Image 1: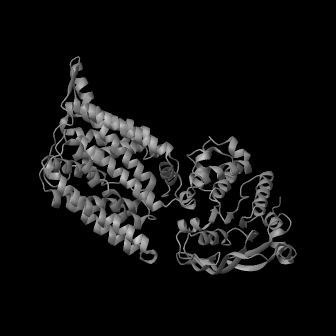
Image 2 (image 1 turned 135 degrees about the vertical axis):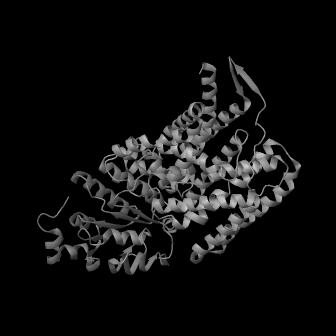
Image 3 (image 1 turned 90 degrees about the horizontal axis):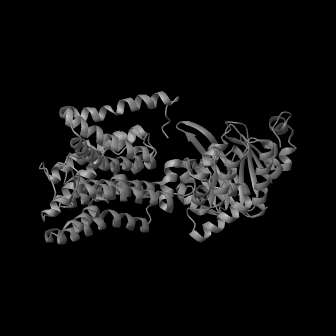
Length: 241
Length: 345
């Protein structure tokens, strides 16, 4: 396994008095895809929000061997973490191109225009739509814009929260194809998915989150061959692509 | 009523409407970026008027001491809230912006005020003294509450307004001021006499509105502010520091308020507490624009000016009643049109 980029230990996250994530530990090696799968309400989004700094959590987070648990959200972005949230959180009243440029807010002007070209090369659809308001895009285009905006910051770790949610199977295939390409380009990815089958096909390592606790972890092959998990997450009727 | 009177009333309406438009746009801007309904917007107007009047008379404006008081409070607030992450560089930044800048302004003002340098210098000095109050107020009262609900922010905003009116009385005293006209020129168009003052008000308003449009449309900072307004979480996720955005929005509101104050003081007498009513009329226009649309807001401000000027001709006792009644049908229409309760965010 490669050197570890992100390591989270004993993370607890609570909404008021109700704890949603109980002592989760996980690691993401450099240039790899790690997935967290689990049912709706398992605490996946909460976990990502705590790693990103959107929510406060208790526990240690090390990024590239530096502790970042005390850093603000902005400082974590500056360090190279990036979250594409489940609800995308685009700037709906602004054109696609402005959304992308704002993604590179912390970059210099030259880096921004270079990153914009790369993003358009990766998502040709966004170039076609560049003058259109983000709020008028289709679901798949929004997901691409959200990923494109995140990549404009040239993150070292990209965290994707349910990128397949609400998308047609064909678009899901495109999105997962792009995720694989990103890994090949050296970006580490922490992928949170309900669509376990699709996630396991591209991830090298997986954690299963149930009711806020990691109940299983292993390589994608190990998880795929675990009979209990197959029944819960990959059985008949389970989503696939 | 003949056409001359109508024209006079319209001229009056346009001048007042222009000033209400500026205030309303500042309210929309601050609300969009920070979700604060800036009740103390009028205080920037009144304090700028009082400051420029003091400078015109060759006196050192008491605004200085108010600024120092706010600076000290902001320094305490910033250091207390960010104690854990207070690196030396950040500490120096806080002290420089809250203590050193106001002290420098004291030196400059004390030296320049008695010289009676004229309108241009007085205007610049007034802007230098009023604009920093915006970010200082944000740091003292609103930054620590950034995640609070709109209602909590509104209550804090009223608190700031009431405190500022009290401080205004303490620092400026109860007397009203009125400054000389910004221009002595006058033009005639038929029966109508157009004063240079009204030309200046309208020209400055148009220039400021155009500058704002360019700022928001083309500069990275302007776009970052729009991003904060469009999606606060999205803005944080791309690394836009929302507290800096809040300070910039408040500085712009203070700038717009100060310019309005300088424009309005030759037209009406300004007292330490005159700001509230002026701000409230801007608020009516901002509400008509749904606290979101700049264009509708500016047009609504013109409408407020028209209602005010015609109702003061016919029923001057009730002119404020008419102006504030405009808000009712708008609220009814808006509540009928929206099918769901507005979310806090």
